[in-house]
Image 1 (cartoon, rainbow, N blue to C red):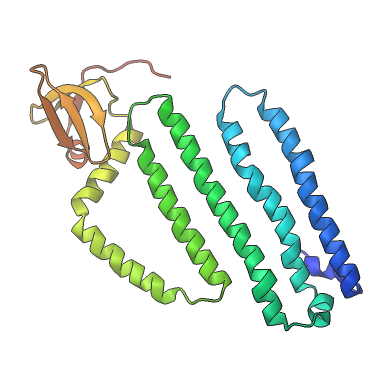
Image 2 (cartoon, rainbow, N blue to C red; image 1 turned 60 degrees about the horizontal axis):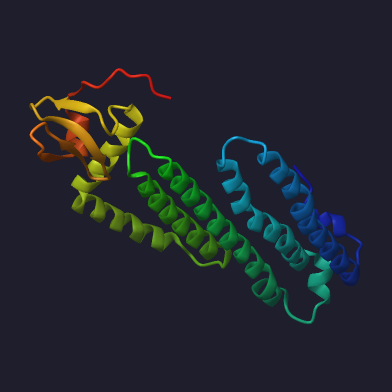
Length: 253
């Protein structure tokens, strides 16, 4: 078991503990900004891809804020400080402890959402086989929103079990009501990872439908037949049928 950081301040007076924690917090934030991040930026500047630059720029703010506010939270937990202040420990936690942790959670949630959205946008801008990459961004945004909201409720001591039960019931109802849409969505994901076809391939389905793939969306795939007719096929139907790709095999990198 690792010792608690609070044991480092045993025997310190309230003033000494306050000065020590603040000095460590400020030093940590400055070291993160001017040493760690500067070295990381120097390293990623020599790489060929721009994805690491996106990740580094998105994580800069949460790293510095965490280094600074973690000291505020630790300060509210030091026994000598809690017993020497004029306010009650519960009020100290409510005014300084929990708000500092809440800000850290929000900053990291914003950064996590931003880095994935920027990476998805960069991948989508390069052009690819499928055009529903932004859907992953939307799903990730929803997951981050739900996760950060649940974490904040837990930090502030709000019971989330009834909310989880209600969310489960609502999820089941939505699943039954939109089962075709959900099936098409996951069918599109399965086609994406199976590498069945890409935009520009000429495919033939087992029912005789044939055409060139011109669009692969969240719900369906659009084919252009040789008669210049657009045919929209649900992804779930494509995933369940036999697909002959007459444009493959082809070496792709």
